[in-house]
Image (cartoon, rainbow, N blue to C red; front, side, top):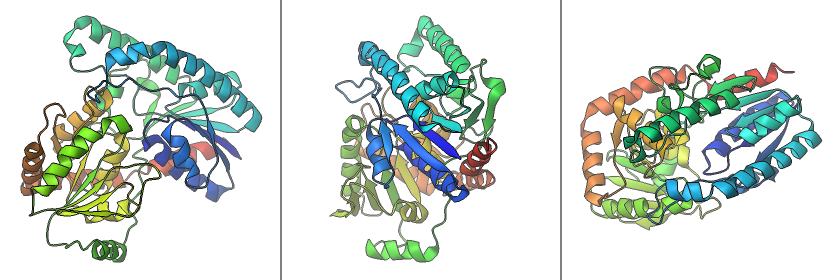
Length: 387
């Protein structure tokens, strides 16, 4: 069987979860071909797997490193040309590879070309409705535009043979604001559970990493895992590093998430700093609290390890703001706003979450719900149904 996997290339969340699917498929005599753009291409290749590279499509970022509607509109002509080029590239790739099924992880160009070539397509998606910034939500015309665009995109995504949502079923769906209000797709959605790696790290491995990092298990450990597009990270990382220096009662591990970055940690006051953390799962397992953005894949992994979380979503980034709001709504953690963020805000939030047992109790409850679903296995089963 031949499977073509195409994924959105900004950040590493889509690539990391598709690698899990490809690894599982490899145990079933399946040949996989990847396609992406941006950082994801090098990330896939760093795992020794070939990946077609196509034209990039990205959002616009302002001078303050927040999501910018103005810059995104300015980039529309370029992104439209890139989308048309993607259609041509994906058409050639799919035509040459001749897959039995295409998996599109948030890649509309791949879905459209799969249907044009009469190849079954499975769509993985946790964002149907593109949420505008809170500032624009103050205007009714912007809300109407957001709803109309959501319905148009929903009708396009549902051309897929299956639309699988890698999230918890209602009422615990993290990406509810991006999915639930879209009527054109509601009847075709199937919630399959998270696609983050299931915890498999044993206590011996965790203790080994703790010893290497000289981390004591009787003192709180906070894992600051800041991934995402490079331009958005530096301001938040600076504030986190300031908070780390001022808190002697907590041990910190900070990971910047630089693809192909140095995997050897650097000693900092009260903890360690990684450009790229090769023992992320072990640190997830030993941590008492996660500090992160609002990316869906990282939040999914946080839940699977039973960790409470503090989110600092990218400014004006609708999807991350929606995820972070839901995290706070279900009592899994707190959301901090990047604008005007101070190091003491981070320190105060950490102290509050660590000292309030309701957050850890809710984390354990959601972990139990998550453990009953296996998103990767569910996708593999759907793929194999096309044999």
